[in-house]
Every structure is written in structure tokens, then in C-alpha cells.
Image (cartoon, rainbow, N blue to C red; front, side, top):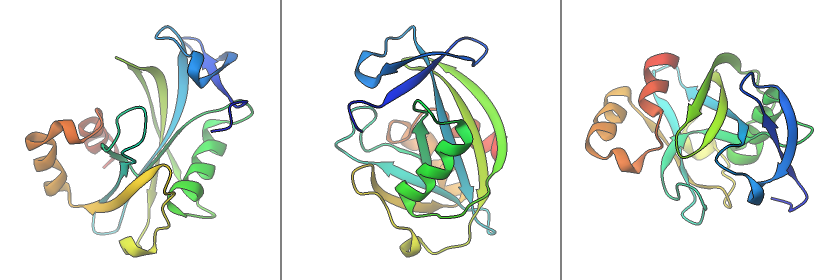
Length: 165
């Protein structure tokens, strides 16, 4: 990230009230995240493993695409940009999913999007600075993994599976 980029800070109604550098965000600051839930026609779920060098949740598996909304971006523009940058998807038209407020160790609104993509895993071009790898999971496999190895996955994936499938 360019040091000059600033993150949109919002109020409890998700209205932009200012901008801050990523390094100056506090637990009281509420920010925005755009998240893309990708499935294929077989009902498999595409997840991305975060790069092991990431500051937050290194190596954990999460939604295929996600990104913090910066100054000058909207949820919609961010998800389109991140899909292309992180896994090489171009000219997508994702469907709007639910917006979720998360307040735990982080404090943000997450606007979810949904997309069906029928591509083999080798057709995705991953952004090596952000993504370690991507993988298609069957629903059963992911449910089992979340039960047996919950610390390998970002929180909220169980919610996403129930809500977005």
C-alpha cells in the first residue's frame, strides 16, 4: 500500500466521517471492507489463503477476495479492483449480498458480494504480495475444516456459508 493512501472512516450508520492512514487506525475507528464470496456451479467455495507475511491473520484462509475501502473508493469499486488485483478476475458483475457489522478485535462494516465462477484453480492469477494460494472447497470439506481447524480460517466463514450459499 502506498503510504499516502487513506482508509475511509465511518460512523455507526456507515457514513464516511473522515480518512486515516492505515497505521493510525484505532479500535474506536470504524472502517469499510468489501468482500467477495465466490462459488462455482458445483457449489464449491473459492477461498484464498492470506500471505504469511501479512500483518493481520497471516496464512489464514478467508473469502477469495476482500479489501479495505480507501479514500475515493466505494464498496462496489473496491470489490471490482480487488478481484482483478488479487485473483485476476476481470469485467465481473458480482451480485450484492448482505452488509455485516463486525466488532471484535477489528471494527468494520463488511459489504459482501456474490459471484459464480466456473474456472479451474490454475486459471486464477494470484497477487503474490497478498495471496499465498487459492483453493476450491466443497461445502462438506469446509464445514469439517472449520470444526477441526478453526484457527486456520478467518472468523465469520461459518456465517458466510450459512448466509451466502
